[in-house]
Length: 101
Image 1: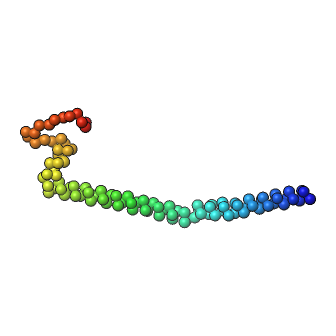
Image 2 (image 1 turned 30 degrees about the vertical axis):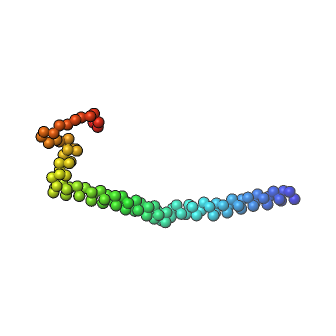
Image 3 (image 1 turned 60 degrees about the vertical axis):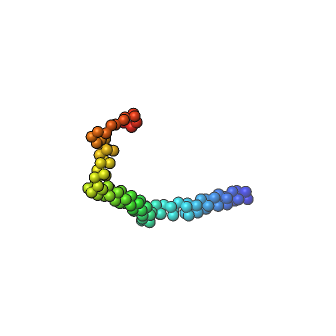
C-alpha cells in the first residue's frame, strides 16, 4: 500500500509540474514570439522618439530666436562677441582675476 501512495504522490508532482509549465512557460513563450510583444516595444520606441522630437523642436525655436536677434539687434551681436570671442570696446580696461580659462 505504501508503494501505491508513493506512486500517487509522484504522479501528482508530475501533474503539478506539467500544469506549471503549461500555464507558466507556454504563454510566456508564445507572448515573446508574438507580434503583440513587438508592437508594445515599437509603441515605446515611438513615444521616446516623440519626446525627443519635442525637445529638438524647442531647441530649434530657441536657435531661431537667437539667429533673428543676431540679424536685427546689434546689442545681441555685441553680447555674443564679448562672451564668446572675448572682444572689448576701445578704451575698456580688462581685469583678469584668474577665473575661468
